[in-house]
Image (cartoon, rainbow over all chains, first blue to last red; front, side, top):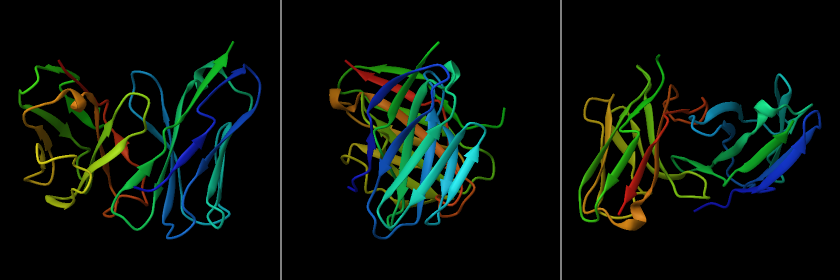
Length: 111
Length: 116
């Protein structure tokens, strides 16, 4: 089992604040890194699929960076809104046939 | 809608009963994954299909767990003689990518299994 770690485990931010969290993964045998957003009572929704070292992806107020050499990815949310409250999951694809998920960062945005 | 559909949404089983969980992936999606998510944990891989072929079942926790996708579309995850430790949310996901990682996974809403 590969070690995919996310930090922090949870955080609370005020509406309007910007925030970021981290996904750490093995730096060898890298194929892809996925980010998903999972709102309560819904299904996980894909945010980004990243494959190249130095990749930066953006979707509205959410962006992500990737460093495959040191084994980490950051997810940034600019100007957090209450609707951003969710669990954010990253998933690492190495040489195996599947994606290994972290335990997620649970974000709560306080109005 | 054309998303991934899972049924039932909730299942309560008495210990020792057999259960069958169904997944209808997005039409035409080649790859299908089953994940198990225990409380407070991230999704853990169970098994992977490419069309009807089960290419990886290394995550199935015991021989009580069995999955099939006989015609390369609908998949069923069967758990025999359920135990309390099988209580979890079972997520199904499909992908248009043949290898399942260059395209995002599309998840169903999951089946929450409670074994009493």
